Amino acid sequence: MQQIDELAEYNQGRWEALAQADIAYSRPLLALDEDSARQWLQEQGGNPPEGLGDFRGKDVLCLASGGGQQSAVFGVLGANVTVFDLTAGQLQRDEEVAAHYGFPLQLVQGDMRDLSCFEDGTFDLVWQPYSLNFIPDAQPLFNEVARILRNGGRYRLEFANPYLFELDDTSWQSGGYRLTHPYLNGAEIQFEDPHWEVEASDGSSQRVLGPREFRHTLSSVLNSLIGLGFTLRASWENPTNGDPDAEPGSWEHFVAIAPPWLGFWFTYQPNH
Ligand SMILES: C[S@@+](CC[C@H](N)C(=O)[O-])C[C@H]1O[C@@H](n2cnc3c(N)ncnc32)[C@H](O)[C@@H]1O
Image (cartoon, rainbow, N blue to C red):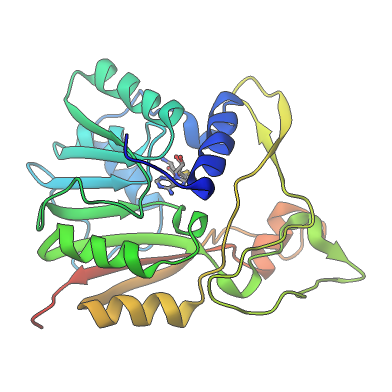
């Protein structure tokens, strides 16, 4: 594995602990067929107007995407799949996926800020689930995503809704979810409680200290990608199944008031 800095080392430790605690992001999908794989993709939200398309024979990079979900989905749909992730424990789940389904996966351990292991124009799709917020500066990553995509290639990105990043369902106080942090690009988020409540597949739960995270403002993300030649194809908020009548301070109520994640599909069209 490449040299990594203090931040990556710290967050790698946190993700090893989260994987060990059996967080949902670390549970491989081992019962997929083509229909359920496609349905899973659709349920992730925000489909591009041209549709998801046929992944058979396409070169797909699951970026910061270990844990055995995207690798299984794209593998079952016939893509040539590469998974790049910081955390060995997460990539181990993708190994389980490859062994289970019997298709090859290329697994690479590293920090997403250094994608120099990939040649220019290698991929048709870069799929990045929630992970951008684990690095403070998105521009070097976006430069690399542009470099490793083919012309016409697609980038699917999800990140923390920057307007309310410091809040969650536990933030309910005196009749509201109160915003108090300045809206600054690249700023580290100081969570009131930096622990994640992790519910394991056996129903047990434990508190695990979470990774360090950073705010990326909407304009900084969109302007960086537009400047590199990306065209926005679709956007969405996630999740969309909140309930404004639920108990204030519950997850269902919180997400109805303040959707925690934003998602986007872009196409790389530098000569457009
Ligand atoms: C929320 S999980 C997403 C993976 C999951 N497959 C999913 O479906 O959402 C975030 C992933 O980002 C990885 N990660 C965190 N920081 C990273 C970095 N600097 N470079 C590469 N991967 C990173 C973690 O190891 C973890 O697997």
